[in-house]
Amino acid sequence: MFTNSSKYALKAVLYLALHSDENKKIMVKDLCERINVPKAYLSKLLQDLARHEVVSSSKGPKGGFYLNEQNLTMSVLDIVHIIDGRKKTESCLLSLEDCSRHKPCPLHNLVSSSRNEMLNSLKDKTVKDLSLDLKHKKAFLPLA
Amino acid sequence: MFTNSSKYALKAVLYLALHSDENKKIMVKDLCERINVPKAYLSKLLQDLARHEVVSSSKGPKGGFYLNEQNLTMSVLDIVHIIDGRKKTESCLLSLEDCSRHKPCPLHNLVSSSRNEMLNSLKDKTVKDLSLDLKHKKAFLPLA
DNA sequence: GATAAAACATGATATAAGTCATATTTAGGA
DNA sequence: TCCTAAATATGACTTATATCATGTTTTATC
Ligand code: FES
Ligand code: FES
Image 1: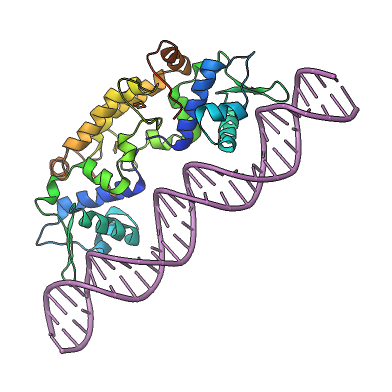
Image 2 (image 1 turned 90 degrees about the vertical axis):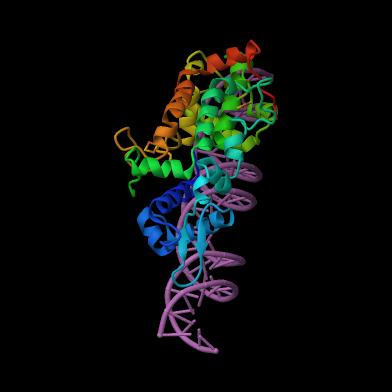
């Protein structure tokens, strides 16, 4: 479904949502152990996310990554789009050029409604929403 | 969503469903032009599909690929599984180990229903179904 | 049987995704 | 001001996906 990079990014953001804020920054060194992602790889992802204002960061001693209020308003789909690009989610299932109701490919009618439903869920759900689910034990984030 | 290989495979099978039968076999050489897929690559895919009885083939002069009645009963999901493996469709969206209702990851509740709906559609839809849609102009297969 | 036309099998190359390593910049604290 | 701890930037390496190429087997036809 998603690429490895997206999964790592989402796990990282969720961990930050739960355990960080402006006064409690988290270093890659620590984060990578908690969410079980290779350190150097995670660094790259976080830098990419920082550039797109999905996470906040500060350098130097006492530095690290964290989420501010604005960061929390990002949606799951935003993050996936930043890391994986839009192609995977937006293009025709058979990669045909003009995907539309007018000229649907054989899979279009079959899956478009459930697919759209799924994508809309991802678009509407913010990082904050997810973190609340986790806090209220409606969802879990094992480290495996 | 799917991998390139799967898309190619599906396009090939659909073309065969519409234009071939036991008495009208189609050679890779021709097929690859019709569906706009690199010849050597398509060969490999077709051989894989033949091994798994998704398509039929015969060697030698007058040989080629075609679909018989049994081939037509394969589902879209069967084909995707053969080419891409089951991991992409069956594993947790965050690749966590024990994906379940009991311990759902943050994305599970959000998308599992629409995701299952989509996968079930793909599981239930046979190649024959799709080819009928095409015949009845309920769907189209441009060559792009 | 010899020939030729097709699928089949195998392996080589190219591109992209994932991973690792190292040097540079920034900022806090002595 | 200088040292150190952190992110940042860049690039090398590895693995998987996608593509290409070449030789081997099967089979209809002469
Ligand atoms: S035309 Fe293929 S998914 Fe819409
Ligand atoms: S636990 Fe992640 S999708 Fe089910």
